[in-house]
Length: 195
Image (tube, rainbow, N blue to C red; front, top):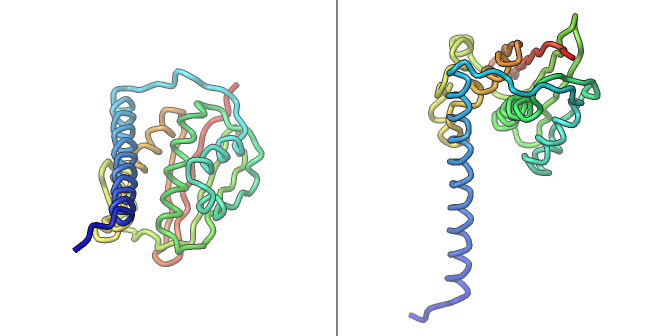
């Protein structure tokens, strides 16, 4: 049997791409662990500034790539939000990424925002698989994954929602979820408006 150099090269390229993808996932999980550890150790914000929510969403879209960002609809996101822009990118990024991951391909995830009595209210809504009531109180715990067989195929460390809630608390805000199975979920991130 003759050796085909072109086929070997293609196989090598595929293997290297898989290794790079897994290394990126591992690095992301380590970053999340470090962030959760900082928050658990009475982490406080070291930076707070006014930023347009659209700027934060633009950064998230860049990280997610064009096919994912094309599925994100925005409503009222031209308002400002105060806090650490990088941490807010992380928090909203986790919410949006989860919404995309657990929704049908091609379906839209809506990010909306408003200001209510000195609080910026940001909502991430999907029409995905939803979360059963018995799981809702646990989804913000570290490493908690609702459906082991489902998350095994979609990936994830079970840290994203824990990180997002920790960031909300660090800002003096909150993160809550409402969900209906087979209808979808809404995650509401509230952050006080501060100068």
